[in-house]
Image 1: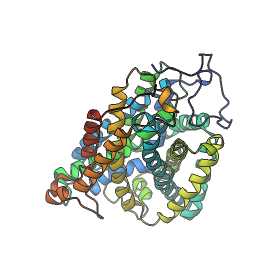
Image 2: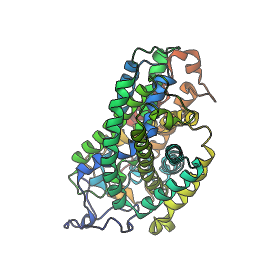
Image 3: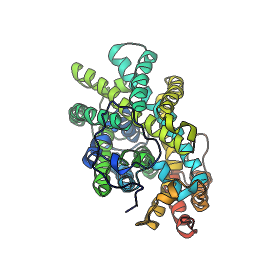
Image 4: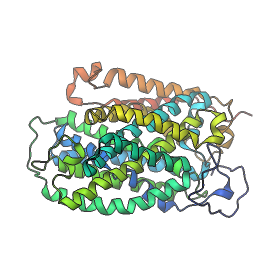
Length: 455
């Protein structure tokens, strides 16, 4: 158990509409609150949206897999990512800090600048743009309004909730999850019933297609790993295991059901449209299709609320002390930049999304390898002296992460813009970049010396 800087006190109730006062500092025990079980809802609602569905669509439509092969690949990728998410989330109640602040233990304060910057860009800009586009497409198909008008509307809602902070984020996700679960449960049943599972891909994906599907699913679900303790740091110490289980289960269940529905939807005859969200709902009865489009938009908003909030936490974790007391300003700035990126991506969303998912996995895998090894090595230690000591250095973490990232990308990357020599020589292996990066970074960090607190 990690020591806390304050004396235990009864948990206080904070009004959800109140702007969050805390930033990246350790949350005092007097302000600890919440129930671990609510993490299941928090991590379900942001995945009940079309971005999750489209990962399943890629498995059968782009990677050349049958439904059975796609299901195995998607469940494997999701399961591995949800497991690591549970392990990371369980650490929040003991440490009381956001995930990227906790990363200072493995990377040191200076070394942690790189993963924090990557996380801020990925969440606050990349994911924000991807999900805003899917929400805009859904609202455009439902209302016939221009996609740009719909984009402005969803961005404003996302920024507002994230700027108000932690309590309202949890509250919004919890109530949205109930409505989204009902809608997508009905849609999933109808989709599974209408799919033609006898369809054989014109160009079978083989082992390479299977591994691409695993990597894509893992990249999507593990993309939430750097957010983990952001939403458990207000819980009371001792609730870590329960919080980890709830977070991991909510993440795995929501991503798996919708990815499988997406894989099945690509096998429904006639389900084709230039608007990808409209194609997914084309087989549904009219009223249900409209409700589903609304749910897709709401789910994307749920995802982006977490993206903007955690993106701002990662940005602040880089050490911008002048902004620490003005936390609510950062989500607004992130939202403006994310809106511009989403606007630019309205014309080619599907292709850009596939490449984006794989690139996410490239850096998250070696980062995760270092963080998990460090967490295991320092279990039971008091981490508070390391979290806010700006002089603390641990270069081994950055060395291991960069080695895993560079070697895996140079040798194994399989992108249109670049194909590594191993992937070019053996094209049937698909894209093993994330797996190699994780194993190499974890193994290297395990043998390198790790620094503790200064005397």
